[in-house]
Image 1 (cartoon, chains in turn cyan, yellow):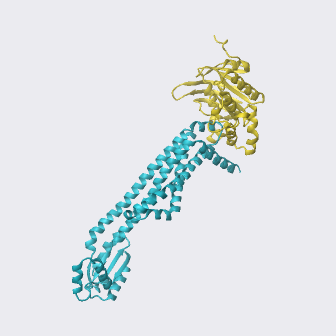
Image 2 (tube, chains in turn cyan, red):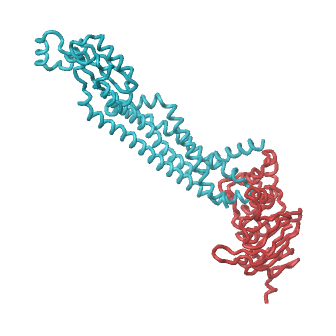
Image 3 (cartoon, helix red, strand yellow):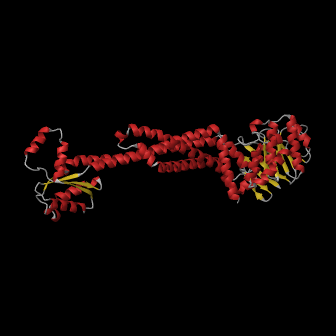
Length: 308
Length: 230
């Protein structure tokens, strides 16, 4: 009973102080909004980074070119044994006819080549297996399997014309380095931005509480318990966090609309549709981040004046 | 009731504020403590409120050793003492009603008690018309009366008034002292520090004189000791 009464009074006191501290509260809300915007930006940046890295990875594969006289069943059985490898994510089968069709489309404007093609009898192209690894670091071992002369591959000797791994190897290796670096850089940027914005918020809240240090002294003198003094400050902090969250969420709508209509081609992702479809998750991430940052900052800032 | 036993206080900068002071105050007394600035009057009240720790000696409130209390116990202990200061120490962003209500809330009083008692005590110090005014909308005398109302609202056993008339004109100072006397008449111990001659002379109770951290005079019925000076 006494606890709920105290709780009610703390909430009421915090809201009242927040309203009466006009400019100081406004400043806290603004700084909170900036901090939370940085966090929202980080969330979007991470999503962007993940999706472009995933996109890059998906473009890498190993193509196994079969000889023209390999029967389809044999190609399909190779496909099956490839699919059983733990490293392999997927195998795409391109039949001889499909390969020819693709070739025609690719060279639609190249009259000479098409001419030469039509002078040949039949289809000069073999079937292709496009192999995608689960992880881009595993192409090496897939290539090693294909090039080995073990029992599994022995039956395909003469059927495999070439494997384009060694040609792509450089690109794949470099891509792996870039993807790795991108992840590390993204993490570092996230960490630094988050840290800086938390520090700024902490300082603002500390200043706000510094202006109340004499009041804190008076409250102690009147015999108020520490938790009863601290409570309203935490409520004030939380209020600026919550208001900051709503402002941030609203502010990002026009921002992502702009990015969606102007940067989609460049980024490869429509930020607006990503934002809208994830708006509840983002809202809760920001809300919880804002609540934690403001509450902890308040507790720390008041602590200094309560330990005497 | 209140006992200072061989209390000395040396501040960190080396200032000797109290020098081996032994003093006893009985329940229901009205004690005036006088002396020049820096004589140790305020240090005495700070020690009693557990705002400062003595360098030497002990301070007892009844049987409690004030400086052996834990943080939580200090909080509860302070509710037994009402305080009034020269600079009022009101909560600037709370109005008159809320300033007093805060002291009651802090000691866990119910909403009904607060709604009943606050208007009553404001009437006692003649601030009924200022109930929703903030401190910055009140005169010095009004602020001090509000501070007194806050000090007595929880019915403390002791009131410490540290230079309560220092910022007031003679009329307001007189009023404040009259209120303190009234409180004392109702049984509350009052400790008043001041260097206002008229105030001391109008009270006619025990006067303790401090100089350089020592008690140099303790009269049962005292007046301002100009005549005592050698």
